[in-house]
Image (cartoon, rainbow, N blue to C red):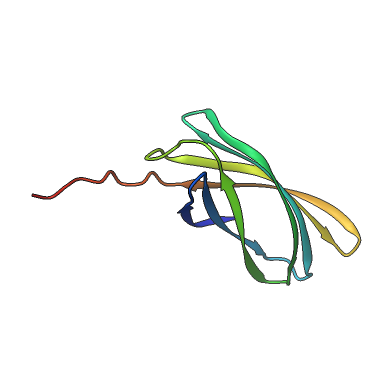
Amino acid sequence: MRVLGVHEASRHEVVFVQVTNPASKPMRLTRLDYVFAAQGQTVSEGAVPLARELPANSAVVVEVPLIGDARGEALMLKGKLTATVDTIVKSFSVSAKIEAEPTKTEVE
């Protein structure tokens, strides 16, 4: 899993992550349980129900809501991604680092 970007909305931010399937079989993503942490403290956590097909050797983008104030801080996204391969349900541990936003300064 790799972070592609962060979008600020009026009540929360959305983190775009890329999920890759390196296997030779397609899988169906069904759920992502996640925790965002900064400096060892939980900032936001939750679950995203999914119904996404992920073909073999390909990638999809998943939107993960970030509710809480973590502006300017580096975050870690950790979680468990649940998917079905053939008829077998599998869980994968996932993690990704979100770099801190650079501070904005005014130029005179």
